Length: 260
Image 1 (cartoon, rainbow, N blue to C red):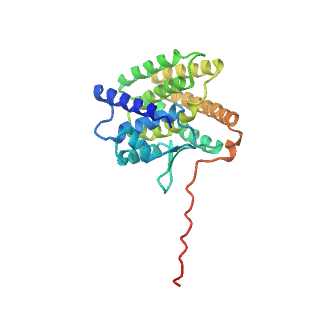
Image 2 (cartoon, helix red, strand yellow):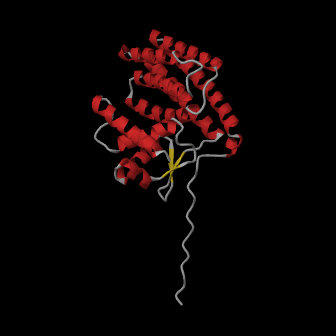
Image 3 (tube, helix red, strand yellow):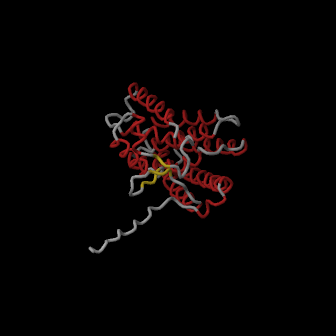
């Protein structure tokens, strides 16, 4: 594992957290979760690879408790799978896994776009516009992680504009799962241009307060993203249709020896 990379991320998070009040603070597990999450989203940690709790704690100079807490958080986001022996694995998704998650995401984000358009508090719409501007700057030279991060920022800004912390928390967890896969491939220029047009249309509907149109556009956009994600998963791993998220193996019963 590239531990120097993790140490760099840890220092980066600590520096940013010290200068911005809106970032998590107070819990040591926050920067640890940030480090692991970013490593997964950037592709440094591949699907199925293990995350050794003890070694990671030593390299980050923290106890194993915040590492364990961070892994529980990431498991809740669908990024990590924990086994009974405390081994953590980066989640590996099958076609069925991906379809189900995208179906749920379509429902949640369609409703979020509807809420954002009908929310009387319009102060958050400017954040959506800002995130859209960043996404429109992407081009054929943008890396997969740059595309994924800009896409994530746009969708998160709409979740925020919906005005519900509960909805944001639930939808953000589902979004985190798909963005992990999305960060591993780049859109073609044609696919990127189409996605940018879709983002513009969604923002326009939200800005105009057309909640029905915003919901429909977002649902169609997520459905299109699902098709592209499934296509890429098959291209990258032909066996993905037969591979699911790792399940915990049942423990073998201990053999009791009869006294001699």
